[in-house]
Image (tube, rainbow over all chains, first blue to last red; front, side):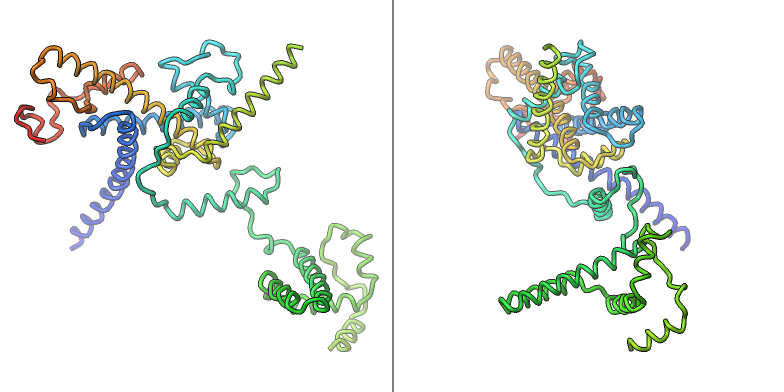
Length: 265
Length: 135
C-alpha cells in the first residue's frame, strides 16, 4: 500500500512541473505559430515549430536576465526602461543595429528602440488567440502592491512588504473620522430643510460608507473628555505630548472623574 | 547654443519615447502578457509597469518576425530552385512550410546554431515518399 502511495506521489510530483511546462510551451508555440502565419507561412514542421518556440522563450529569458543584471549592477531590484533598452541592445548586438558604434549616445536615442517603434507602427496587431487564465495568488499579490504604492511613503523602499492597515496602529485617525462624520451630519440637517429626499440619500450614503462598528464606544470617550474641561486639551497642545499622542488625565482627582461620569449617565 | 539644442533634442526624444510607451498600453502583442510575465519573472526581472513588459514582448515578437521572414525567404528561394530543376512538377509543392532547414539557416545569422538529428521523424509519414502522400 505504502509503496503504491509513494509511487503515486512521485508521479504527481513529476507530473506537475511537466504539465506546467507543457502549458507554457504550448502557449509559446501558439504565439510563434501566429506570428509565422502573419508573415506568410501556411504550415510548419512540428519539430521546427517546437525548436522555434523554444528559442523564442530562451530569447525572452535572456533579455529579461540581462535587463535584471543591469538593474542589479546599478544597485536596484526593479528594472527600469534603461535596463530594458540596454538588454535589447545586447540581444541585437549579434546582428548589429543602427548607431551601435556610438557609445556616448543616449539610450533614449537608441537605434534598436527606433526599429521597435517602426515595427509596432507597421505590423498589424494580432492578439493572442485565446485569453489565458492567471493564477489567482499572483494576481492578488500584484494588485496589493500596486494599490499600496499609492499610499506609500517615499522613504520606504518598494521591495518591502506593505504596512498593515492604518486602523491597526493609528488612533487619531478614528477621532478625526468621527469629527468629520459629525460635520457631515450637520450638513445633512441643513439639507433636510431644502429637500427631504436628498437628505435621506446623504444619510444613507454616510451610513454605508462610514459608521464604523466601534462608533458608540468612541463617542462615549469623547464626551468624558469634554466634560473634564478644556485644560486637558490645552495640555496636549502645549506640553510634552504635542505629537498627537494619547493623553491620560491623571492630574485631576479621581473622585471628580467618577462624579462627572455619573452625571453623564 | 549647442547645449540648448541638445537639450531640446533630448526633450523631443523623451516625449517621443513616452508617446511610444503610452501607445504600448493600447497595443496587444501576439505574445500574451501572462507568458511574458512568467518567463520574465523566472529570470529575476521585477517590474510592476505593464509598458515595460509589453516592450519586452514587442522586442521578442520583432525577433521572431525577423527570423521567420528570413526563413520564408530561404523557403521561397529553395522552392524556385526546385522549380527550375523540375519544370514538370510546378504545382506540386507551392505551400510555404516552415522547415528545420530554413529555420536553422535563418537562425544562423542571429548567432543561434541549431541542428537536428539527421534522421528526425516529425510524423509517421515523414519517411514516406512525398509523391505518395495525399493531402
